View (cartoon, rainbow, N blue to C red):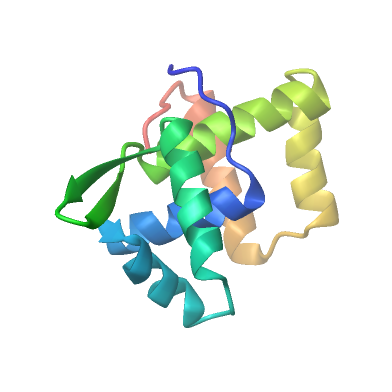
Amino acid sequence: MVDRRPLSKGEMEIARALWAIGPATVREIHEYLSESKPIDFSTVQTYLRRIESKGYASSKLKGRVRTYSSKTKPGTVIRETVDDLVDRLFGGEAMPLVRHLVEDRGIDAEQLAELRELIDRLEKGDKNK
């Protein structure tokens, strides 16, 4: 596992946009994000530089235009972020997080069935989806 600093909330939003649209310029990411809420062009530019410096993205300069590409998959970032959260908030124990998510956030019948299937599969020793 690569030891990277975690992404802030704003940086994560930019990373999600980059995953959604693929390699893109600051302008393209700004336009994509502006469809759902107002965001400053310079803010997008700053966040892209930060996620690049943290190792989550890379960029290439072609002429005067810089194109950013993701260096990480969403699943990798999710895993790293959740692992960090579990370590910091729950002392490495996952069950308090699971309990919180189920009890405080709620779970519908379909999700409960999916959770039962997961538990059954894990009890049988099958960790694959």
